Image (cartoon, rainbow, N blue to C red):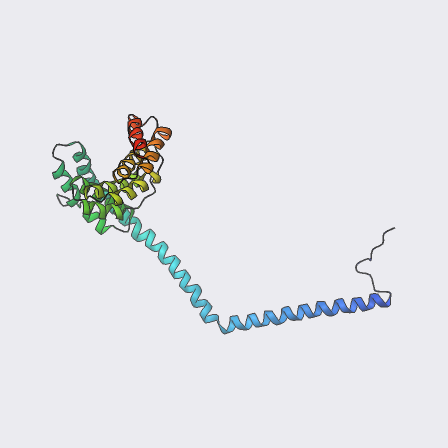
Length: 255
């Protein structure tokens, strides 16, 4: 039958007494070590309490400062910027369907009747969502006005994860570079554009533009890959309508 030593009983044999003494001695040593460590820690804390309080205070100031900045500065400026943008957006939207496009895009950019345009909003409210969105609209307006350097400047300053605005902004930069006869740069931005979102509108559009530029640059293999992706992944898109013609042309050029 198996046996076991009961815990808590008094040692009876000599061996058990020796073991008990050793255990007590080891335990005492452990507690002494812990006491010494605790004392040293307490001494360090006392000695450096001013530094500790300073660090904690600095962190608190940073956190409270950020919260205050967000609550009392960014919040009101965002609202103010969005209100300022109302008139500029009206001009921009009217320009999209008007025969007097250039004048309306110019008003959208520069403002009128005491109201800011996108350029002023981007400058005045640059740290807010309103200022960020103004960069997008300003870039697209400059693109329509054929001021391609300005279009690149403002669209590059725009940042978003929106599934439509992000790829359109990247694609707009690509369009501007194409107009500046810089197809290599345009190709890079078209590729960023179709990678930014796989929605059924922008992805096939910029895949097609990227394929056309790649073909123009002599990279028929890349062009063929992009044309085939349109055919396979976006068969219902406008770009897929005659894509087999482009696929045939690219296949004939691949060595």
